Image (cartoon, rainbow, N blue to C red; front, side):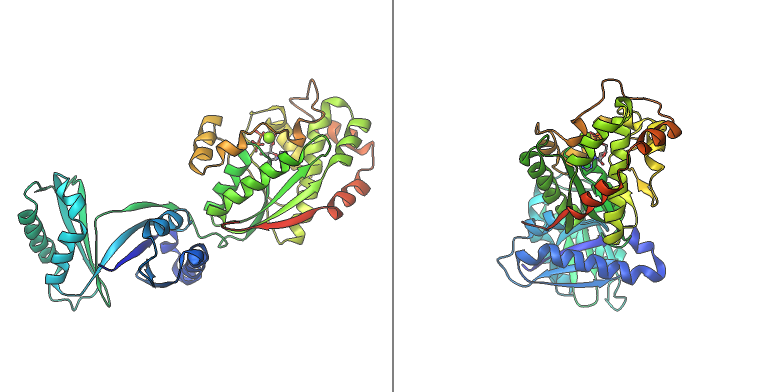
Length: 392
Ligand code: ATP
Ligand code: MG
C-alpha cells in the first residue's frame, strides 16, 4: 500500500495574500529537513501539503518525527493513497486502519470531498464506509461525538486518501517568515527555550555566546555548541558567534563598583550583540530572561540593560516560572545538556551584593568611569562564527 504524509498548515492558512510566501517557505524548510532521508515530491493544495516519498525504503516514522518539529504545521498524519473509487477506498481503509480498528471500541468516519465530481457525497461515503467497517470489525460501534478512532477519507484531485491518526504539529509560523534575530545563548536552561519560542513565531535564529577563558573552559563552550546543534531540529540552520569576553570582564572588575558588575556586564553583552546583529541582518535580540529570577532580572535591572539597546529585545520567557521553562526544555531535549555543570561567564566575578534596584544614572556613571569602547571593538573583531545545521 502506497503511503504519504499529509501536512495541515497552522495559522499561516489565514495569511491571505501572503499565504503563498509562507507556503513556499514551509515547503523549503520541509525539503531541507528531509533531504538526507531520500527523495520526496511535495505538492500543496487547499492548505494541505502532500509529502510523497519516491522510494519504498524511506521510513515514514522518521519523516513524521522530523516534520513534527517544523514550525508552521498544525497537524500531520500518515495516509494511505487510494484510487478515486469507493471499492478501493473501502478495501484499503479496512486494511490500512485494521490494527487500530480491531483494538478499539468506538469509531466514526469523516469524509472531505474537494473533488465535487466524485459521484458520492460526503455523508454517503461516511454512511457506506461506516457500515462496511462495522461489519468487518464486530468489536466496534459508532460514536459520532467522542470516538476513539476517526477514519478520515479525503477525496482530492488525483487520488483519495485514508487515514486514522492525527498528530499535533509544532504550530507557529515557518522559520524565516518573520525575519532574523540574534539569540544570546548561554549554557543555561532558559535561553535555548527562548530561541525555540521565537523560532516558533517564524523567526530565523542566529546565536551569540560570550566566553571568558581561562575563567570559562572549552567544555563550557562545547556544551553551548551542543545546545545550538539540538536547536537546529526546530530552528533550522544557526550561525553561532563566539565572543572573547575576558578582557571586558576583567576591565569591569578593575574599574567599576562591585555592586554593578553584573549589570554593566549585561549592558556590554547587549552592546556587542547588537553590533554583530547589525552585520548579520538581525532585527532584534532574544534573551532567556524572566522577571525576578535573579538580581539582574528585576524590572529596574532590565530597564538598565535595555537602555543600551537600539533594537527590540524579545524575552519570551519573561512571564514564565522556572518549572514551565524546564518543561519546554525537556520537550525540546535541551534540559540534559543545559544542566551539565560547566561555568558560564556570568558566574565569573559575581558581586556578593548585586544592586537589586539599580538606578540607570548610577549605572551609567559607573560604566562611564572607564572607556570600554576599544575593548568592545576588539571583542567584536575577535568574534568567530560557525554554522550549525540539521545533522552535524
Ligand atoms: P539561562 O538559563 O539562559 O542561562 P539564566 O537564568 O541563567 O538564563 P542569566 O545567567 O542571568 O540567567 O542570563 C540571562 C540571559 O543572558 C540568558 O538567558 C542569556 O540570554 C544571556 N546570557 C547569559 N550568559 C550568556 C553568555 N555567556 N553568552 C550569551 N548569552 C548569555
Ligand atoms: Mg545563565
